[in-house]
Amino acid sequence: MDSLSVDHLLGIKQLQPEDIDLIFRTADHFKEVINRPIRKVPSLRDITIANLFFENSTRTKLSFELAEKRLSADVLNFSAGQSSLKKGETLIDTVNNILAMKVDMVVMRHPMPGAAMFLSREVNSRIVNAGDGAHEHPTQALLDSYSIREVHGDLAGKKVLIVGDITHSRVALSNIFCLQKMGAEVKVCGPPTLIPKYIESIGVKVEPNLRKALEWCDVANMLRIQLERQRIQYFPSLREYSLQYGLTKQLLDSIDNEFTILHPGPINRGVEITTEVADSERSIILDQVENGVAIRMAVIYLLADKIDKRNSS
Amino acid sequence: MKSRTLLDKEQIKLILDRLCFQIIEEFDSPDELCFLGLQPRGVLLSGRLQERLKALSPEEEYRFGELDITFHRDDFRRREKPLTPQSTRIPFNIENKTVILVDDVLYTGRTIRAGMDALMDFGRPKSVQLLVLVDRRFKRQLPIEANYAGKRIDSIDAEKVRVEWLEQEGEDKVVLYNTEENG
Image (tube, rainbow over all chains, first blue to last red; front, top):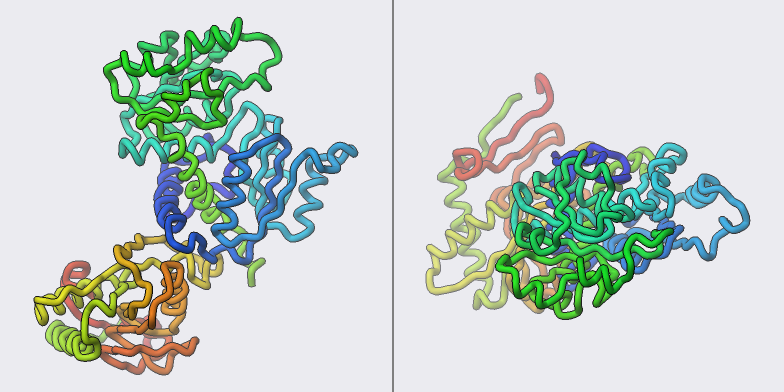
């Protein structure tokens, strides 16, 4: 297969395993490109992409912007803080106004789950979901799986543990879908108040004990506690959380299992992971960031190929 | 589909040897130059060149790499079939070297244009030359010519020239296909 089965990247749920494989293979080539003396190719010279961030973001926004620039696309940036949304404009109106300026693709982060899906039905543009509330964050899941593949090879049969706030995490949900589609086994670990009740119904096992879970896994993905999404107190204190679910050097050294450590960032050092662990050789956190650019280049490149070809003549 | 063999195994072998001697004669030292096979089919030809150069002048070490031009093509989103990238492998510095681009067939010249652009991402070569096995002359859409050409042929657009190799298609030969019915 050399073309995606979808016209937008709304979530991992809509992708076929072949799509994920194609994105990975394409990202391999872009990873080589971004390590050249001149880290840029002219493929998307005639494409304009709008990055619409209705929610704060640093690395995802930078990563998308860099990916777009490495492909020679023209880039428009928009952040909710400076927008007319405050004046009462609807999402569709905002986006249609931007598209009227001849924009070909929209990368959007939005606090409402399903915002990207909604937009893809209402406007005539390719949509890339850069995170919609607590729903999905597909490019993060792709770059996590891609980084695991780099260290461990084929994902099939690999044991991946996700630790932390599973309920409020779009990274967790997208990761679960992606890993399962690629044949990996997924377990989650975290405070019972932050594990969705129905999680086992999608084939994910729960291991409440962090030590046991770490002894089992090939890869541990340590999520951030998303205090901004929690409306009530789900656990007594950050200190309590860190004692129960934080990954420390002592814990790491006492476990006889060479697992790889991932973290989607931003890190709360000393909460879910200590500084020593985050900077250890087992951690591939900075590789994840580098791979993020290659993965996003692959996604944008493959979707750009599906932009109405008649427009370009 | 009608087809006609333009070059057979023996003729290809002779041509490859001649091209190798031209290179050996042209350059005082292999340190001055490097070869880049264009993906996908130019790489097969550059593999053969490497083999023959090794046999003809065993004491010299020639550098060979592979260059993919997918992201530099001018027909992205303009062709029906999506482009599939291949690997790029340039394990040496091209700065101040003569780079010889290697491809099997020179036709419109567009692939070579993309190849030259892709090449510049890796540095500033002293000069760039082109080596092809088959030159479909009078068919250029860009002002590009080969420095070393195996065979120059006249063809029409409805014809397709295919260079086949032992390791891929089972036999070394160059075939001219006519894609038009009754043509």
